[in-house]
Length: 196
Image 1 (spheres, rainbow, N blue to C red):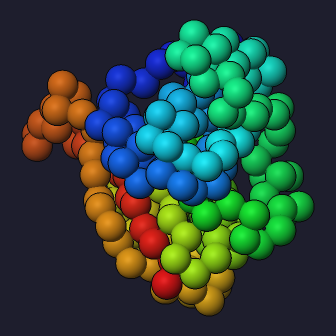
Image 2: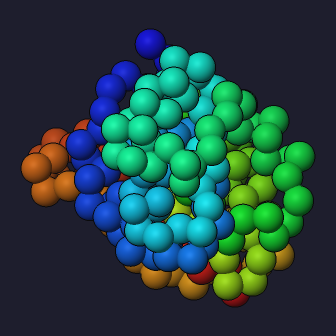
């Protein structure tokens, strides 16, 4: 049930990358689903973690996962629409924002609206982060190819009046191989940035 359909093993190493950068940070995990990025941030030593998803069932599952991992006291959860939440937040309240949305582009016909959705959340996150803050952002839609995704990120950064220092550009885990003769297999774009 909900916007996402299962636990996504393709993000395994990307979650570890987030954990490695979380120590001492105030983390906002948007579209948390079952809480995997939030839990990894907490395990990585985050000062605080707030995890958000629009699905009440997903947030319930995320809370259970936090409890099973002994992290229920380290993470707060809320049922929220991220598009409504981000405009209400104050700048500097978080210094690490994670954007792991569901696929906004499910066909070629939805690329323009998907681009607007990706730009909206990334622009809002960039405006909220203080200088030196971190942004993890990704797209799991193969229709939103890397060139389009990067162009959107450049446009969002320009509108937010920030510069981005790329820490890492990542893909899906190696057990989800990219076959060069099957374009659909090259679908996950995952970037870690510092706002400078």
